Every structure is written in C-alpha cells, then in structure tokens.
Image (cartoon, rainbow, N blue to C red; front, side):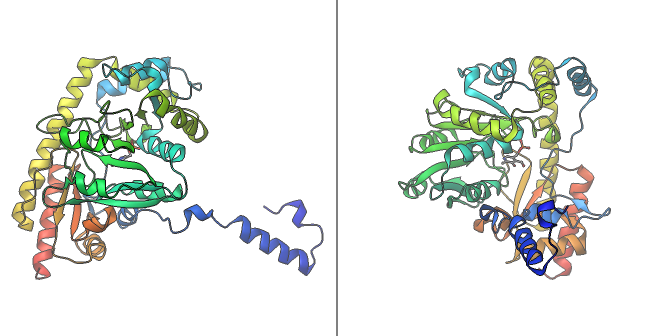
Length: 395
Ligand SMILES: Cc1ncc(COP(=O)(O)O)c(C=O)c1O
C-alpha cells in the first residue's frame, strides 16, 4: 500500500525518500538480529509424505470421546469473553490445588511458551545474564537474547546428564538474573532429584523451573520446585499432558510479589489465555477421576513407546542410553561430528526426521534427539532405517 504522503510529487527526490522510508520501515528490530526459525522447524520443513517423523515435540495422542465432550460443553456453556488477565479465578484455584499457593500467585498463559516470554519480559534487562542448561530447550537462549541479555550455559554431562550444582554456582555473577531449570528435560528425558532442585533454589537468583513435562514420567513423579524458595517461578501447562498443544493453555506459579510484574507483561502480550481453553482446562480438573485415568493411559502409552524405542536403539544403532525418566525423548550418540548435516542427510536419504543435538547447545553435538511420541511401527521402522543407513555408510 502506498501512503498519500509518498504520492504527492512523483519527483526523483520523493522516490528516493520513499525507498529510504520503505527500507527503514521494513528493517526488523535489532533485538531480532540473528534470530531465525529454529533448527527443529528447519528439519521438519524437509518432511515429505513418505518421511517417518521422529523429530516431533508433541504427543501422538488424540482427544478421546470424553475429552471431546468436555470441549463441546466448554464451547457451549463457557464464556467467550475476556477473562481477568491472570485467568479465571476458579481455574487458578484448581491449578494451585493443594500446593499452598493462592489464586493470585497463579497466572494462566497462552501456553508455557508465553509464560516464559512474560517472565523474561518482566525480569530480564539488556546486559543481564541468564543461566540456561546445555543441552537444553532452545527457547531459553532465544528469549534471553530478545530481552537483550547474555546467555551463560551450565553443563549437563553425559551419560546421565546430571547438574553439577557447584559448577552452576561458579557461573553466578552480580549480573545473573535468572537460572533456568527444565526437569523432565527436553531433549534429554532426564529428571533432577529433589536435593539437586533444592540446592539450585538456594543459590540466590530467581529460578524459572520449566515443568511442562511433569506429568510424563515412568517410575515416580518428578519432584517439583514449587515452594522450594520464595524466588522460584514454576511454569507448566496442558500441551504435553493432555495433548492440547494447539489450545495454548499454560501457567506460571510464584509468590505474589514475584508474580505481579509477570501478570503485567502477560497483559500486554496476550491480555488473557483463550477463554475456551480455560473453560476446558477447568472442566478437566473438575473431573479428577477421569483426569487420573487419562494421565495413567497417556503414561502407559509413552512407556510402551519408550521401551520400544530403547530396544530399537540398542538393536539397530548398537548403543545403550540411560533410560529416560520423563518426557518422550531419547538423546542418542551417533558417529558423526556434524549432526546438522547428519540429520539433514537422514531426512533426505533415509526419509527419517530427527533433531540434531547441537540445536540444544554445544554439548548436544554428537547426539540426535529421537522423539518417541510416534506410532510403534514408525519408531521401529524409523530407527531401523537410521541403522541401515549408518551401516551402508560404513559407520
Ligand atoms: C521444555 C519445553 N518448555 C516449553 C515448551 C512450550 O510448551 P507450550 O506448548 O506449553 O507452549 C516446550 C514445547 O516443546 C518444551 O519442550
């Protein structure tokens, strides 16, 4: 569209001015310099109808009849209007449950990602440092960068990807604003034990504990950081637990004083989470028996897929990895020093999509992330194809 202001003269000078204005207007903000669509999306863009997708980060579960019925009722009877910025009070009460947190210490967000974005916008200034796990979920470093902060990584070391709390402590400076923790971990499937979490909570800076996978566990529920100290913010949501990735329902929970600026940031980002999704979430929590059965069946399905994936990895790739305690990812060492090229070649030559480990940080190089949120047959065939391809390549 050409504005009237640009249209009045038509001389060479106005044309030059117009070109200059267009180039200035269309220049993205500096805070997005160097920020691109993630490697995960780049790999997924190589998918063809014949590809086996083991790169995916969402549950291979569809809503059952009951869940669809709850959604129909939420759409028919729930409000379609704005809700209070932090969400409906009844839902906030249900999210807080028996944790001892009050509804005003919960903010319902448009997915966990928006909770993270709100926290970074509320707390992180240019020049601050944000401590993120390496390997770790790639959003953390990007959110730090958008806020103008420097990312400082702390190492999680193979084979069991433990956090060295002493090493983490040494990374803290006067500029450290946030420490990000993610347990169960994407991409590692590892879980941090309660003592480790308490030690991190006691370090001093604000801690953001991303617990979006906390319902996806195999032997025992992963410990939460909720309430471990006044400076902990827990984020989570229903994307993974209820296969509701598209409904964008997440939350942040923190002591009232810590929560206040997060709600303000959230107001200017999303106003409120979708009122439909909030009504549905409320309804799910109001049916605890149904919810328990859903979660049990979801865990049983992922356990089966995990066990199948581990067996196929051992058989076809001839490696044994620590058994993932949570989430639905296996982080697998491969004989390649450049796993981006490796994953792209697998996508085009073997028609299998996996995510190069380096997408999650420098310590991920030499690994690929295999998501076992996939049908058993796809897990078997996909990992089998990787094995055949490796053997054909003489590796
Ligand atoms: C560790 C981690 N945190 C947050 C998110 C974002 O989840 P949501 O769909 O709730 O925004 C993801 C999604 O893959 C994730 O893996």
